[in-house]
Length: 259
Image (tube, rainbow, N blue to C red; front, side, top):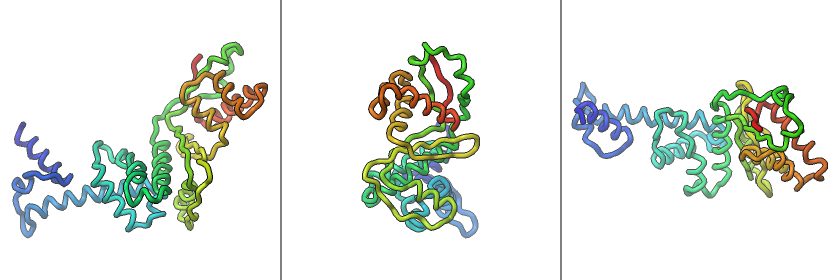
């Protein structure tokens, strides 16, 4: 290993609070000791990670308040150091951290707020996939419809939430008074997606959540129709599935299809 590489590795280790010899490699300057000079960089790195979390988790920060959110951020940084060169992905494990780590795990709303915040960010940053248009299906023969499969746009994400995280996020986003926590008796299906340069979300009836999940598992149109018979008469299932497809196309939620 070259001397430069060894120095770089020690400096990185110091920034990440790992034992190393970085201090011995740094000269003092003026009134700043070597350790103080290194600490400037370590603190700046930590503050940048906290800033990234504040940007990505709007609802969670608004709900906890600045001080408690900073304490959470410090705990998360210690438990889940950044492993990617881009800060964009640093918060990807925060919902899981909240779900399993005391005392946060005792308030399951926190994990759902983090999951919802992250889903909105993921939708906005997703790849610019092509968007399926209604006219793209105009040439499909009737006999081919049963075997069609569809691909969702990269920005589409699904969550099942027990708590009113979306309502809390909406209030936080506009700076309004936050809604009080409310828990539904059963998990509510939600879809999050991006259309053009704006992220959207809405709750789903159970049958639509089933159909969208089946589509994302690459199930055939015929199989989705058969599954919808749990809620609809078989004679109405195909029309219902077609109506859902039309809505998803209008919303820009589908990428393409194949026979």
